[in-house]
Length: 209
Image (cartoon, rainbow, N blue to C red; front, side, top):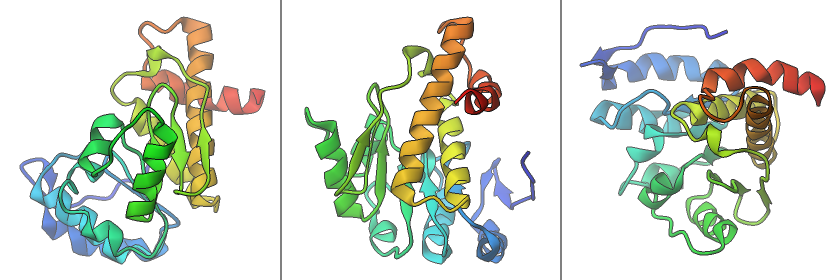
């Protein structure tokens, strides 16, 4: 279960004044995730840049953790520790990527350019570090709902925190996430499938697997 600590906010969004508390806690983190539930504000961007600059552990950027870097990718290029990006197609383009007919090749080009592992979400999610890659074949259309990506991001950061290498952690998280979604679809159907259903299915799926 989550352990929550307060951070400074402005208008309900992260404030740059939250950075000292975040930086103070980063040295004891095994992995860090930034993005879900945030917004595209200067405060979010300042926090993302600070985490990329200060974190000495793997960092996952998802949702608005990616969007706030549009046109300002220098913090990614300067990073010397593992970074995993989890964009959907729109976020991928905001990061400067171009999606061609070969999604793996497109993701690999961006991974090499940014020095990160890229998990490009979609009907056939692809994961690559620019050299090696995996294509995922589990999942169903019922998973295309708000919050589903947050479950994936949480799985990914938990696997990184357990010491899995970034490429393998991203591939494993994508497979588990979407296979759990398939288990939910088999049980309840695709219509009305929620991210909470997927979370509830994870222990049963992992036991079954």
